[in-house]
Length: 496
Ligand SMILES: Cc1cc2nc3c(=O)[nH]c(=O)nc-3n(C[C@H](O)[C@H](O)[C@H](O)COP(=O)(O)OP(=O)(O)OC[C@H]3O[C@@H](n4cnc5c(N)ncnc54)[C@H](O)[C@@H]3O)c2cc1C
Picture (cartoon, rainbow, N blue to C red):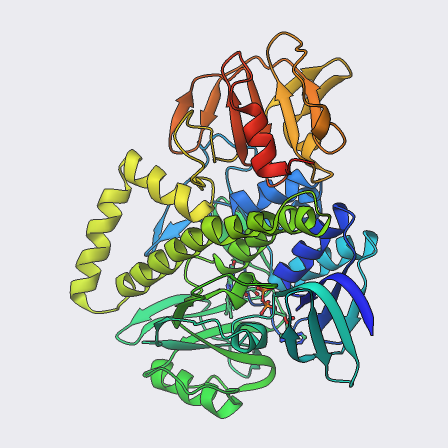
């Protein structure tokens, strides 16, 4: 039986991101993925939000995505566009890029890092003891791991086998999405009617002056809301034809579907993200309506929160207790996404009263404070882990500052490329004692001239030093002394 420190089930966006994080930390990790290649059936998610771009920037790979996608103001709430171009981030926008491309780029990164991926193999079960987890594979082999992470999507076998509850709400609406060819050319764009929202688009598009402009030719991407939540299981061409006819009076001669799928607004969240040696991340931990395009983003950010913590636990530099902070920090973030998607599904209800509500919301969101508040949440830029009272930076993401160091100018995010903690001193060079951590915390003296400005909050007082976790969140803020620094180093990066 092969043994690994960590086995990740599922090589979707969450699993790949987590594997990359663990590999950067030098952990023996393997992915088990049922699909034979990273190719996806269908395009699924349409892009990345600002904080996800920042997270990828923290690892030095954001440009790979930016060079292939379309930058745009994609944030919206209940149909109202929320412009974030004034947000203090290097990426005050979203990126339009289909999930199949996102996965291809992530797969390239994971390949470079030499993460072993067992493709075409399925996990069929597992058993955990106090010391390890034995993982059964469909080909009769098994793997032994210290920790098992279920990144195996919304129907997660890992979640079910671990006995983790998945409370929430059943679907109230469903839609079919497909890529297909049509005998007759439909009018491209969005239509609203008494059933809900429907659209025809093309896979290939450009964003010009903030508007989507479809390129000529290629398959059509269809989304059509069904009259009643459709049944579980794979939808057929006939289902698609009937749903189109019900809305448009014709199915436009739909044929040759490259793929067809159904999504719903089922909204559920794992009661716990950890059951002893088993953890959940991404869709395995939370499912909701795709409205607002947040699912993939939250999964990637779960992975970046978990990766360094799990690495420290398997390397015995931190106690297992550190893993509990993963649930404590990420469960509330997931719960907020569930809440905002439910609110948006309600707002999208096509009747006249909901139209009045949408209009009212649009009016409110035209005001600066509500816009910033909701856009901060949807972009992921306002995430605030509860690390106690103190400076507003504590628990929030550090901004990507332009720093001056003895070795020349450097962007703060560049210091995070290796996924190591950073102790950044912005005051006079210090002689504080940090030796027990010096092998794993990058300590750097730098100068920064400029404001400290956070999304939503605005300007905050400049700190004299900050301790930054590998996920880019601030674990300690200095006020000219080292009060509290050793405690923070011990809490987050272990005592040994
Ligand atoms: C129509 C649609 C539109 C969407 N739009 C957006 C959007 O615009 N923005 C956004 O952020 N999100 C969007 N989403 C959601 C997004 O696609 C998911 O949130 C995202 O794919 C979750 O990633 P994941 O890695 O957690 O899970 P998945 O992508 O589901 O990956 C799970 C992986 O696990 C593998 N697997 C499962 N079980 C096993 C097993 N037993 N053994 C081995 N392998 C296994 C699967 O093959 C799969 O590769 C959309 C989803 C849909 C359906």
